[in-house]
Length: 137
Ligand SMILES: [Zn+2]
Image (cartoon, rainbow, N blue to C red; front, top):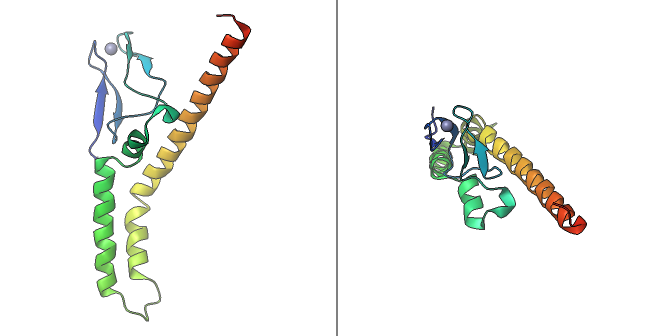
């Protein structure tokens, strides 16, 4: 694996239930272990519940920032070799070749996770509001 990851483990049986490049991940906050059946708080939270700092940490964890920095260095280096009459832009080419296969899918996946998480959160909010309006449990 080219990205270093954080592993999240069940507190009872230590089975890894999640690996992420971010030190935090999105979810409803609790889960049941698929291995031993223990229920526990898994440390996740939904996107709207995160502080702006946590949202930034989710989107740009240190590993991703490291990659972005590396790509930036390569793109800047490519400017040194670019000629005004080049048919393709060398820095642009370097960016596309380095970014698209690595961080591109990563950011797309993050965007998808954020959407899913926001939808889950909205649904949970609506159902809890519905309950309090009805006065039923
Ligand atoms: Zn377990």
